[in-house]
Image (tube, rainbow, N blue to C red; front, side, top):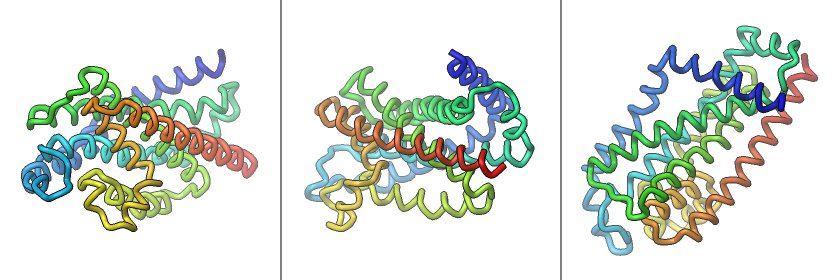
Length: 256
């Protein structure tokens, strides 16, 4: 019970901090919105390529941009932990009775919920631009769920890296090095069938691609078995990332 209450208390703290400075949430929306609008218009005829397999590029692109948003928003999740380390907030927390697990869980949950709200905005913009959700309400909710699940895993990974490196410059370098390639090594912008063989092989093991494929299948509502399979893969990925963050937290405490 203590873990749950502590997590909710810290979640409220993180949420209030976000509400006080909403510009960060807004700015993380700007880039995906630009990609959705520009790519949706510039490459709308790409669906005419043999083997693309989609009648509308905006329909194809929307879940990809939603997942891209989840990745980039969550990848910077460790910055909040770094700020707490710099300000001494983390050390003060550790001398209180607050649950240690709640310190990580609240960060991860806050990121997942924030991404779900942001993803809903992107999805609405996609619908305005012509995308459709044949999967209905369940399909739309599943898109948000898949995005939030990826965000939870990436956020845990980012927070773990923050606890290990304890340097803003290092975390920024790692995020910049991995985040963009992960997007382009997925089917966010191009159909898997049109990828070179080596990229297709990497995409099969790429959690970002799992999220894109899961979200895309959920929107279409045609293959719920695939949605479940990708959801299970993302769940396993998220659990692994949380375990990594937990171990990183233990190492930080020992180093104090």
